Image 1 (cartoon, rainbow, N blue to C red):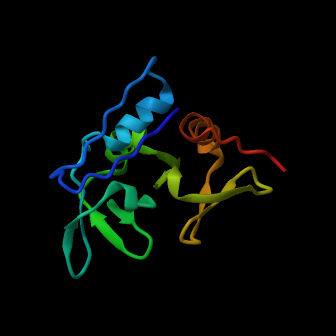
Image 2 (image 1 turned 90 degrees about the vertical axis):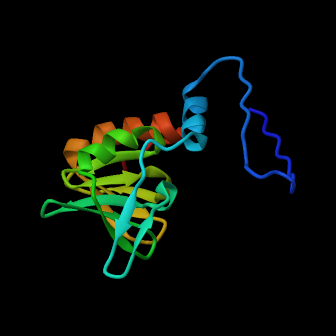
Amino acid sequence: MKINLYENKELTEDYVDVHYHEMTEELRHLCSLFGTKKLELYGTDQEEKQLLRISDIFYFESVEKRTYAYLAKKVYQVSYRLGELEEALKDQGFIRINKSVVVNIYKIKKIRSEINMRVQAQLQNQEEIVISRHYKSSFEKYLVRMRGVIHEEH
């Protein structure tokens, strides 16, 4: 795929044009990144309420019927249920990895298998999360589809 970037200081709004021969999974994903978000995600912590950028979120976790968005250094409570987030953000790199976590695969730095059939994922902020056996297969298929990554067993 060929990409041309042009800077124009006179623009009042950024825009992207996509020319394609055939719509592929890669192009669909690219369009979902630039397209309008299906979700306005506000997060609250003890000090503030703010609009969160989906691309800044490392993962969502559900704890005691509350859902939290984890960013590199901050955590915000959000008003969506985990299942709603999983469905709304599936084309933007988010997938469930255990009963209570939906992760952004673009924030994963490395993956390693453990003896008990679980997989440990290290995020870009050095945090580690567990991919349970139940979700391992769908996670690996999703990685291949979205990033072209194949997780090898050791």
